[in-house]
Each structure stands twice: as C-alpha cells, then as structure tokens.
Length: 81
Image (cartoon, rainbow, N blue to C red; front, top):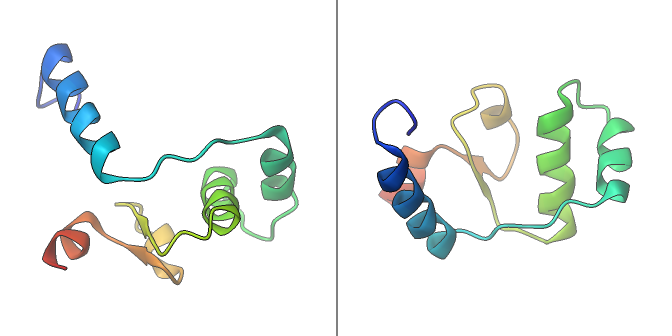
C-alpha cells in the first residue's frame, strides 16, 4: 500500500482493515514458541503460533511460502468467499 497511496490514504485503509480482520497480541512467550517451532521462517512461525493461540479460522496473506500451510489463504481467495 505504501507505494500506491499517500500516508493519509494508507491510514484510512488500515483502519478499514482493522475493522475487517482480527488483530492479535504477540507476547514474549509467543516469540519463544515460534523460535522453537520447526518452521524455518520466524515471522511465519510467529503468525502460526498466534493464530493457533487465538483459534483463528484462517490466515490471509500474500506470502507464497506461507500459503502452502493449512488454514492460510490469499487475499484474492478471501475476497471470493
């Protein structure tokens, strides 16, 4: 979004997204759990740990590697449903 919109537009679009999606808190314990995960990418592991903690139905992302996991869908697939 940074490249397509100015700061004001980005903030407004972020507000809209926050109303559509669930944002979870990340704790120090979550970080340690992610570090001990077999997943090689720490950020992906952290997202997966937090999704499990919150019992989320699915994760929406454009990350090609992360899309291989269960319960992970692309934004375009999310918008189709």
